Image 1 (tube, one colour):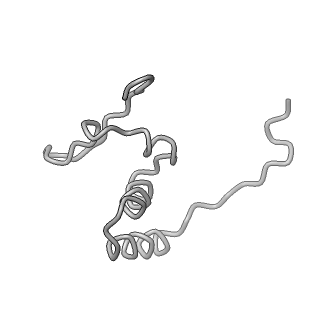
Image 2 (cartoon, helix red, strand yellow):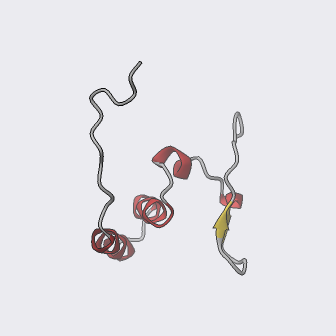
Length: 75
């Protein structure tokens, strides 16, 4: 299969737009806005962000970071 057939190149989202989205997310403190903020800060895919466990989010380290690992079959 030709991977380029019918594919359009997408331009990156301008930083000004990302900052505006993040500012709007801060105005409403709910799960959806936190998820959008996380995606806009990290570049994660939606499925990657929603698949994170609380223990995968490390905020109290010298450099805050995420642990990307599979969670197959976990509750």
